[in-house]
Length: 314
Ligand code: G3H
Ligand code: 13P
Ligand code: ZN
Image 1 (cartoon, protein in one colour):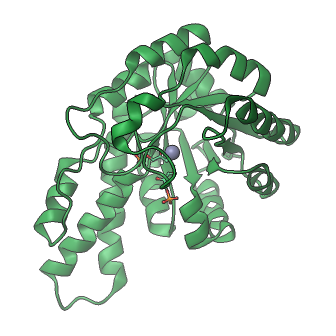
Image 2 (cartoon, protein in one colour):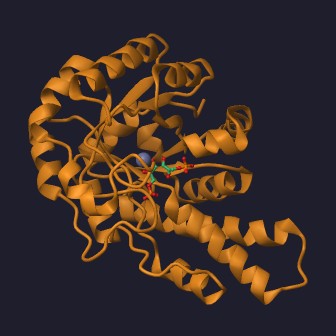
C-alpha cells in the first residue's frame, strides 16, 4: 500500500535535513515522467492537483492516473495532495475522494478567519486520516488578486503569528511566504529568499514541517530552447537551486514545483514542432516532453536530498 499521508515523510525529512518534492500533475505524460524519475531514484513523492488541473482534467481522471501510479509503484510512498484548496467545501470533496493530504489556502483572509477556516478543514480531514497544509503570508503569481512580484517582500509570513496560528488551527504543516512566487518570472533583479524568516519560524515551531511554494528554478536550458524554437520568454527567472537546497536542509520539508514541469514539456514540444515540421503524431511531441520531465525531476530529487529516501519514508 504505497498511498500515504505526509506524516512519516515530514518526520524523516525534518530529522534528516531534506525536503520532499511536491510536483503538480495535469495529465498522464507529466505524471509518468515524475513517477518514473522517483522510481529510478527511490524517492518519496507528493503528487498534487491545482485548481487549474481540476478545471482542465477533472478530479476523476487525475485520481485514476495517480491511482495507477500508486499501484504500479508499491515500493514508493506517494501522497495524493490537493494544492491551494480555496474553501472548506473543496477540501471536503477531496478528502471524500480519497486524497491523503489537502491544503487550505485562506492566506488572503484576515488572520482570525484564516485560523477559523483552517480549523474547520483540520477537524474534518483528521477524522478521515487526512493531513492539512495551511498558509501564512501571501505568495505572488497565482491569481490576479494576489500580490505581484514587486510586492512580495511586503507579504512575507509574520513569524510572530506562527505559534498562535498552528496551536489554534491544528494544521499539520505550514506554507510560509518567504520571498518566492508562482510562475516563471519570480524576480526582477537578484533572486533572494528570506532565510531569516524561515529560521525564525523554525525556532518558534521546533520540529514543525514548513512548506515552500513557488520553488521552480526556471532552468536556463529550457528557457533557451523555448526562445530558440519560436518562444518569447525574456527575463524568466526562478529560485536558484542552491537556495532551494539550502531551504530543504532547514525546516522546509515540502517543496512545490509546477512551472519547471511546464517549461520542460513546452521546450520539447517547440523543438519537435520546428525540427520535424511534418510530424503530426502527438506521441512524438508528448513523449520527448515526458522524457525531459523525468530527467529534470531526477536532478531535483538530488537537489532536495530526497533521492534514495523512499524506504525510510514508507
Ligand atoms: O498552484 C500553483 C500552480 O502552479 C498554479 O496552477 O494554473 O494549474 O491552477 P494552475
Ligand atoms: P512554481 O510556479 O514555482 O513551480 O510553484 C508551484 C507551486 O507552488 C504550486 O503550489
Ligand atoms: Zn503554490
